[in-house]
Length: 491
Image (cartoon, rainbow, N blue to C red; front, top):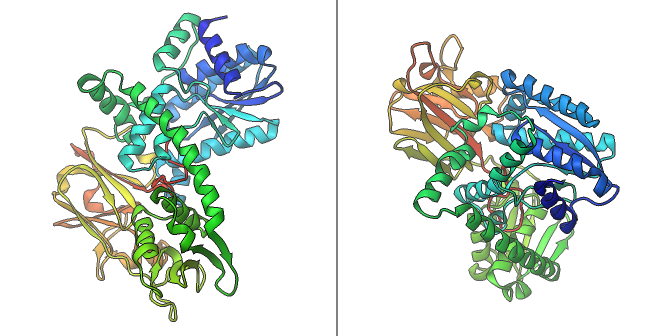
């Protein structure tokens, strides 16, 4: 048995990722990592007393490569005598309909397909081929986007007792060496070289730079730090859960919600108080930001009796009689004030963009990325509206990203003429509550784009276009504050 296969077997047994009788769905893209995982698990199926099913997903983004990848996976499945399901998902459509980035939509659809394959075949585990290199990239990605201790634990070896990652301590170099020695074919995904994606820039630019100029073993350092955080996170999560039960209760009545008893709450360490507040918000179906957690802490410790805090979708937190009360006095809706007269929340924001780069838009809660490209990606027309491509020669920095204002007009791409932004929103069936949070990108010449919705005609790409400005808007992940939750967008 090859040393690499033996090493993987030891990991599977030691971590109890697979046990006798498991039926494992192996996610296989056709790339080097997943092809190595498939061949290794096929060799270990008999010793481990497990059975395998192959799942392959075409994301509908690279038609020129997808057919060859599916063919390689099917032929490999046939040679190994394994069942294989190949499916196609429409990532671009999903991204547009749900307002997600291409990467986020692809991840959701990919895992959704694999879970359906597992259900059809009685699968008990889903194996994915994330490597030690992927783990280092993921930790840097989360750090750059902003996260807490939970986010810095990286990807888990096993998630939800279903998804397993046997290669999480295996380097890409080891995998390529194994494939070469065993003469195993694989294909390369060209999109992994496109620097429009932050993850790719981390892998292609940032990590090599850190290795060369700061720490040749930066990958190991990041993974070791994640391992330390994992142990500490488990401890803190356990302590926080016990404290939550002690100080949080349910409140009945017309405005049913939660109450936090401040006497017991105030005795907890700061880290535990943060976690209790975040868990309370999540229980009330609210996604709190770092700033909101800070506001809740201030309300609990120094706020006066009777003072309240307004959170999203009508959630109110009041301090009365030694407790914090969480409730929706008029249900879940965007309202303001004392709630005697519901009114639509006003959302006003404005931020100057001096040049290309990454900008966090606090009020809409999104990351805006501006990058110059020498040429368009091959699949640029099939990408979702979260990434727009403009003729850089038609745009003048500094730019301004701002909320919609009365009287705004623009020329929707492909339309015969200009119209009011408000009328355009009505045509697109965008509600008043939604449109107040949609950012406009502008320069001295007017509107360049309604971000995530439509480009203005004047910035459109033409056959004579030279340098391109790629504009990407990515809504913040629900739990990227990372106090307790681990659902971080990424791999």
